[in-house]
Length: 358
Image (cartoon, rainbow, N blue to C red; front, top):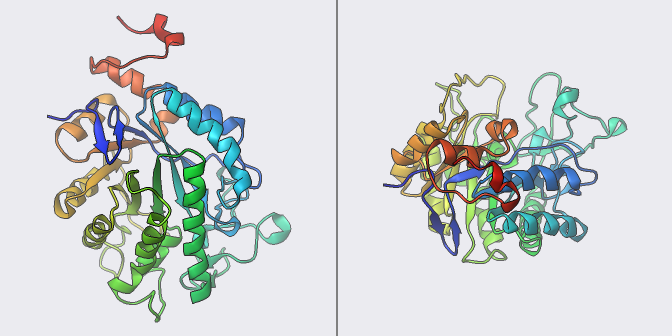
């Protein structure tokens, strides 16, 4: 029976355990460049025993940033410092990953600790906030610009170019961000996609962009390296024409057929009227359903805070990996802590050996 510290081989990569540092925006970049904060933030989690460390939502173009302080991979100049980070992560026995993203209508915001407010160009934001349709987030946010077909093609090309740079930077896993109300999720959901062309209307049309982004990335991403997709399994908007779990299952089947290895199962984030009742492991059933019905590897995420809880998710075959965010902010060494609590062997950095529980 698999457990939290069972290795998992995906294509040419063997993860030493099932613990993933989930992408967590740090809002600490200038012009998309990584810096010492990112090195310490990501590197310390690799030291802390995670098998896979995924860098935050990394914008594929400047307009795709959530805030002016997001990480980016839209130019070659971003690569060198990221290489320093990926090298350090691998030296700790972990695998470096990156989440490629476009914020869509959620772009041009201030950082969370300053209110996540819409920024005008005079406030450091930008005018060309793009989305599938000109549907504003709320009354306080101006409507985004509807992407033209040419601009959609440019977005696909930007994802492809960013993936090539990610490979050069030393990342071994790419996760495509198709969740949380960002651009790809906006195309998937009828709540935010009101187009009448080839990218709107039917399920086939609304999923077209995600599938085309995957296909474009696979032209430059080696066939022996893992490719993940994060989905919001549901919009959490009942009794409406919204994105639902059964849609995610069908999309997961199609993504698997294209060569996607794992679906990172989150939820929500697309519209203010969502009805979420969060609790410990509240999103894990999505991972379990997609894993079973689409026959694809899944990752569970959301209020996973203890070693016993994480281990139970793997042992009960609800998911194949656990993606942990806030608990890794509270305890950068969660992987080492969990190994100790579960009485599982886990190598410690030699510099820390003298503190290892006996």
